[in-house]
Image 1 (tube, rainbow, N blue to C red):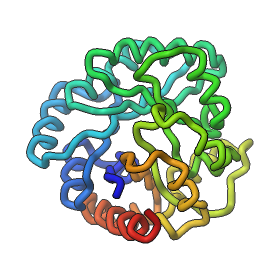
Image 2 (cartoon, one colour):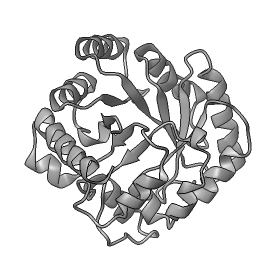
Image 3 (cartoon, rainbow, N blue to C red):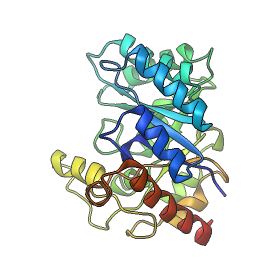
Length: 263
């Protein structure tokens, strides 16, 4: 069965140590952390390293490098550097730069920066960004060649962007070191309503098997056995489970039940 990781978005109001400890208490195999370069300090790194060591959890990814036309490369590099210090395997990137050539240049530079730590630099597409679907994401990655470049698949963004599962199945498996996983309602937000798109992504996701996404088909299209970061941003779960470990446990239990049925 695929290893599962607690994505930081499940517990967005909690810091790195609480996130790590919640993942361990819930029985996740791995964990992901949110690294805000403006707020992350050396103390955060020290405390997160200690928590990872105490729990024995691998760090699947750090997020997010949000590529923007006017952002500083030093901020992007800091996310990778924090990930390197903590042993992260991947860094999640999205782009709000409409210039895809510039996005590719930034990603190529980040791949070079990550060479010492071998962190995969994973581009995620979604209609909330300027890389809106799989076709655009692949075109960006095709602009440069580096062994650390990667692509991140998230079921809700696959569905909302109109990306076909048949096209997911055609992706070079070497570009998919891991994937995100969740379910979602059938109703899609209006792509022109940015607020509705964001609310859909951060509040309305559902437990695997409780929504309307074709998860079994998508799962079969992914490389077998890759880690799944359970990216279940849900207002309902946040309200039902204010304690991070209880929320993480609810997500882990539902995910494992789904995997046992469909994997």
